Amino acid sequence: MRGYHDLGGLPGGPIDRAEHDAALWEKRTHAMLGLLAEQGVMTVDELRHGIETLGEAEYARLSYYERWIEAITRALLQRGVFTADELARRLAEAEGRA
Image (cartoon, rainbow, N blue to C red):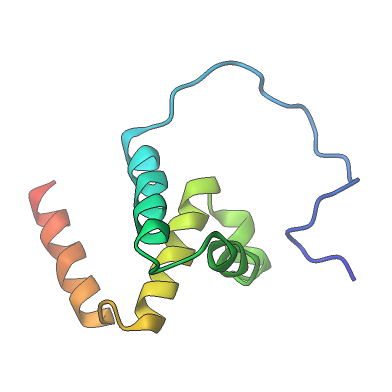
């Protein structure tokens, strides 16, 4: 059975081959996963699993690195690296600085 995330062999539409730089937040997200993997906190397989279990609507709504952020956040919450309250507090602080 094909999952909603499995596009292998299906028409995907045109590919934008124009060069583009990743945004700073995308670079930071990528670096964060590298650090988490290096420290043994999270694996790339866990990232993939987290992305594949987002649900069809969420998967379609989010961009590539937004999927990474969701998967990383869920994994770190499950491991108890931080709590949902701590995360909410930090997000509120960040929004207050913006």
